[in-house]
Length: 319
Ligand code: CUA
Image (tube, rainbow, N blue to C red; front, side):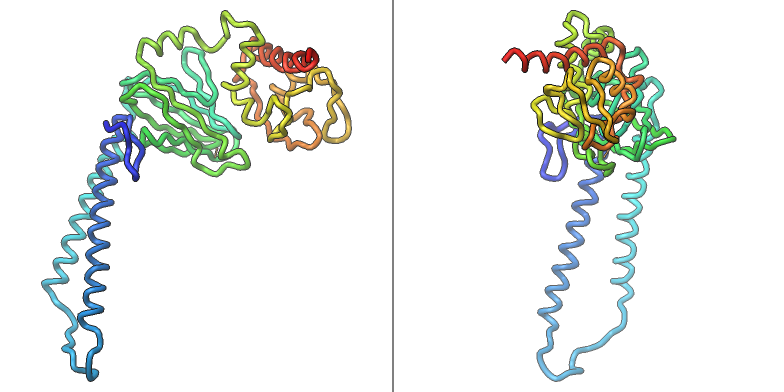
């Protein structure tokens, strides 16, 4: 597979990419040829048969059987080629190989989460082994999203209340962009992630290291990693900047104003509640748009995030 890409397509890194690209270029160049032919002949005839003298001097004829057969038969053949070719590629893209590794994909405003059968889960980072078919079983917690990995040539809607399926087999180790390609609200453009393709060995090690329990890391360090990897950073800054949600800077220990006029002490319990049931107590000036992390974060991960948020406060005090 080419690794550079062209002006028309990014580089292809899945088993289906070659089929998609060759069909795309076939349609593209045939269209280009026909476009130039039609425009070229039109321009030529406009000049050649422009009005030059008395009206009614040019011959008039109503049809040309030979020409009409040619311009009916050739396009019909072209369209049939595209149909058969496209249908075969469509089948290949939609029939999931039996030995595929299944991963559950959940889209929600505004991040992706991935659940592995072995218990691992990640946010905005899909880790897969190279040269192995991967089946994605996808659903949404809220509105319609769309799972799009340009380098793999796959794009599939992710719907609430229904499962959709797509699959791919990555051919090269590397990191590839993942986009949401269905406008899903304010944070749509931030709903981006990575597909990390690793060797089979690395993948097994990654699965075993698991699920991100953060072994060998302090709660604070682990929390700092989770703050990025679980996409908290999409909405909550740590430098005081106001985003979709309030910044975490200098928050711990204060009395926070809430929507509706009451206040709450910003402590461990409030952080925990806001992670699991985000819309119970929303900070004044912000919309109740945070998704729940119920079932996504494990206990140690919640503890780690709390420790991280606390650490932001302590550092401020030390200055
Ligand atoms: Cu999700 Cu756009």
